[in-house]
Image 1: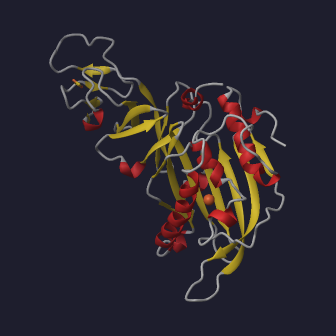
Image 2: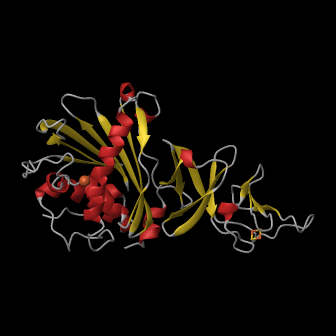
Image 3: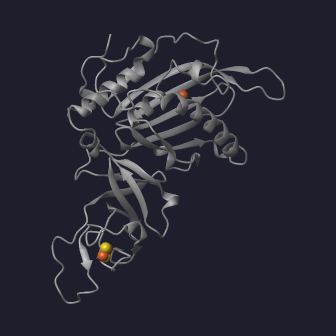
Length: 334
Ligand code: FES
Ligand SMILES: [Fe+2]
């Protein structure tokens, strides 16, 4: 079994929303590694957070044309991490040890992504609809929860919790049974679709309405989920949740939603409020779950047919921990 940080270091994880990263560098923490990210003029760069000279916090540094300049003594590091300037010693060669650990960084879907390993094991998720202007998007405030990224993904994929945890938002307590559903394992993730009789909230004293909503789940390994809600009578809206692993027991989730551009005037506010209420219901349950770490086997918990989607997901994550391809998982629990 590989260490958690090592197993997931070869994947891309988001560390910031693009709009948060302006002219100032930003600090982030990913897989117990403290990072600083900044804009280079050509793109984004990521390196260790603390200066190689005397440990100053590079979040307070200044991005320049040559690289990030430390606020303490002005040493400047390029995007590749090498020190290019030591102002106190002009004309003297920069010692080779004067370097920061630097990491791959890129920007896509309004997020800054970092991969800590030299070679990513998989590309970023493919969400072309976010790049062709066919949908509008709105982001939720960051979700900093005391829960492992894998457990966060599992709760999003959890079909059986909807009628219990989400009572009062969209859950339908009358719908206890989870009818059989198919799960498709793909090389890049897992996919499933269910129809759920969601309850829309009562408006103006009218009784809540049941709307048979099609939920389509698509996971990209290891921690990115796209979940589309298609009610019978309304436009589809889709949530994108990417759980970024801060440590084995803590994640920061980047969560945003796409919706029909025609709804731009009203939808974002309405959506944000209801989505935050739904997520608060999940958080209360999830932060109480033990162990906090995502189990690396099926042994300590019980999976039924209703849990097939989270089980299929966990199988892939266990394979990653074991150093195999996620599509190369062991048997499902029966
Ligand atoms: S601590 Fe950064 S330049 Fe001295
Ligand atoms: Fe939930």
